[in-house]
Length: 460
Image 1 (cartoon, rainbow, N blue to C red):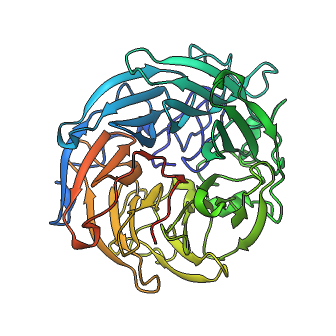
Image 2 (cartoon, rainbow, N blue to C red):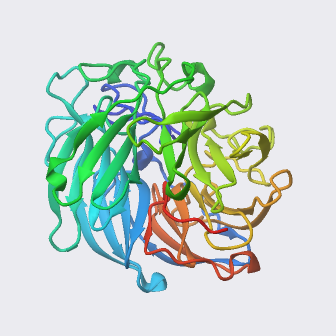
């Protein structure tokens, strides 16, 4: 997802929404690492109650992607590996390890010292010293890599599990003592992603089972169909001017899944629709509601409120490659949408209350746990990070924001609340730590483990 596209070599991808390999010479809307700073000398723009405490510049030139947290560490994914960052003192956060491992997009999850990393670009082999290849290579590998990160100074690669069409995102679904399942979302959006292991219309997710006492034996145990999910019309991304004719394909599959373990529910953002699933049988999700809102161009991500009563879905309008927060853009484009979990009724939506000329949609987000209001923290690309009160979903209110300017402008992939602070993984800036001073977040709960796409507790 991004803005000025450059001609690339093999193996990068389309949109943070839609990461899929492309051939040499094709435009690449997902090569975020090539974007020049957009601050243009502009100062930081932020609310008075939000402060940037720390920035750890990115390692290398690769795109920075998702975040996960466990114990004293934050785990920051990228297209070239992952960082382990000590956040025991957030204002003095320090990188402990950068572990190089080729293969975008590096979506990360963490569970008792096991790190799971998504690979959605075909690789010459499953190990970290692989190189990008094409889907036409019958030996190409994509999927989920598993690492032992209990000792950050001695990271161990334990296993690599191939999944069809790779792993655009991964979501942990714990299922009792000693057993962990991983939901893998993938799709075939481009002509160059179709190959021996991937079809555009595969219409399924992959379920990996991980025996925690022997994670090396992790394997795909089910590929349940995504029922009631219409074919995604690629023209909804409005990227025709950015990619060659025929490059984008209509497809089926899901982009991201969020699990609410205490209620055995999942929210699946499946490009053409959103769904709420019963996951009491981890290998056979059952659709409870299929949500369809015409204004949503691409169902990208999801998050439950911490009482389990509502669910928030994000719209990746423009594939994350076009400006969608300009003054002339509708207030419904690239927003987050709120629904009732029990009935599936649409309750309202939220979008930035100010115009932004850069690439802007709501991207990866979570909600603040353990407070009496529904407080959203969301990345918004070149608009940085926004914090909004969604308690009255028909009348949401922004309560804080931070958009970095000079010398390296914001282009933020993930922004999450965690244990009293806001953490951002920024495509160009690297890892940011923010504080927010607002009564709505006072007394927020701390979580020992925090995968934003795996909500392990309820707060009534």
